[in-house]
Amino acid sequence: MLKIFYMINIIIILLSGCSLDDSDSYTNESVIKEVDAHSVDPSPVWLPNAGNATAEFDSDFPFLQFIPHLDLAELTSASQGRELFVAEWTAAPGVRPLLDGLGPLTITSSCVHCHLASGRAPSLMENGDVGVGLLFRLRDSLGNADPFYGGQLQTAATSGSSEGQVSWKFDDNNQPVFTLVTNQFPLTEGINLGPRLSPQLVGIGLLDLVSVDEILSREDEYDIDADGISGRAHWHIIDGQLELGRFGWKAMQPSLKHQSAGAMQQDMGLTTSLNPAEPCTDLQTLCDNQPSGGSPEVSDNSLAVINDFLTLLAVPKRRISDQNEFDQGAAIFTHIGCANCHQPTLTTINSDKYPLLSNQLIYPYTDLLLHDLGNDLNDNVKEGDAQPSEWRTPPLWSLGLVEAVEGSRFLHDGRAETIEQAIIWHGGEALASKNNFDILSVIEKQKLIIFLRSI
Ligand code: HEC
Ligand code: HEC
View 1 (spheres, rainbow, N blue to C red):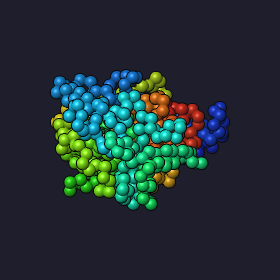
View 2 (view 1 turned 135 degrees about the vertical axis):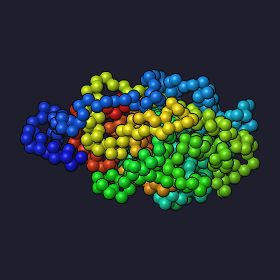
View 3 (view 1 turned 30 degrees about the vertical axis):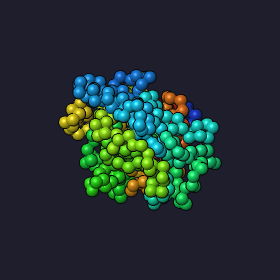
View 4 (view 1 turned 180 degrees about the vertical axis):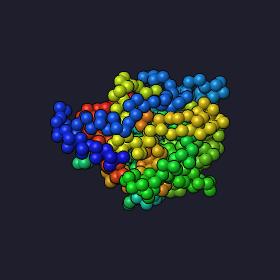
């Protein structure tokens, strides 16, 4: 496909000379028009981007909005889950036993502090501080956790001292470098800070319902088709079962339930039946003799309603002002190889529990597989089986809404301020695609970005 694109490209350039009325001298707009004329359906059919889970766009509240037409039982359960998601949790014993057990080590006191209704929480602050929107895994390049602090840094504490704070600055290459500031121990030699930006929660219930087989059908670990792209699944063994990871920047969690229980433990110091321990290591005495908020602190019922809430979140519908321009942007996205990883469509399985979400064609722009994105995006932290430079293709739907909110950032460490900057950082398996992006004309780039802002 790409080869054909290049051949047509070269032939057109040879035939037309370099007659450009556009300021960019590498290529010209007729390239894409010619390619479109040869290989792309001139008027692709676009179904709603998230099937039944598509909602009208609400500019004040694009994320954390319920799917339309829920039945009463779904609405009740999702509303209870929403209450727990936006609640301020407190240390035990608290006035509301349902909401106590926070800490002693924690990062913040509510899920919604990191997963805003409108975009991404503050991360790389101008004064060199790191906002709550960025948390840190602590591992070496072989995957070993810090023996004292454990596998994640907790920057706050409900009693005693937190593990420390992180400050940041850009290096000469415009990459953020992070430093732990702590009055406890320095990190053990070889252990690095692995930054993870809080993603907006969009369509995660649908992604939870994509079949393992569909994800595996796109795997090409040894690049048998020799297209330079070798996506692979991230497998985990949980309770003796092999589970496919699909959530988080490294596909560390196999389901929303595991993701929430992990967040409760590592981000908030809340225990669940899935993770009954506080996030202290054996060397940390802070968690000993702390009043507990129950055993576990978050009941299975609370975990289940949060799961319903997360599952029943809507996806804002596309925002298209010029259909033709949008179609051309979509064609460019495919032609330059973005769609090789950011797969436009997936389908959900049949779900007895969530019939509205069954058998939906969705447009998340991800394959949910791990890809090596090259050296610049290597943070020397291995998680599970994912190497330091391997990342799960993030879904791109609703990303334009994120970009519109001031302070929002992109990529796992938030180094990119705009969608275009995020593209330019792509390397490794995505290098060819990034190079194709570089040689697009200004107008072609604009069309691509307009498309990305509308999905
Ligand atoms: C301190 C900030 C923070 C808090 C608090 C937090 N999260 Fe997250 N959340 C994150 C980060 C960072 C990630 C990405 C994790 C990774 O890459 O491994 C994430 C990922 C997720 C995802 C997966 C999203 C995806 O697209 O893969 C879900 C679902 C989620 N969180 C739910 C929750 C719930 C429910 C709570 C409250 C119990 C919560 N989070 C609390 C920061 C936070
Ligand atoms: C080889 C697979 C691959 C290809 C090809 C690829 N991407 Fe990505 N993309 C990724 C991965 C993996 C990440 C996450 C990297 C990170 O955060 O370190 C990402 C991140 C992004 C982000 C930031 C997402 C966010 O949530 O912050 C955008 C935007 C993006 N890609 C757009 C594109 C576009 C446009 C193209 C085509 C020019 C493209 N990508 C090609 C795999 C790919």
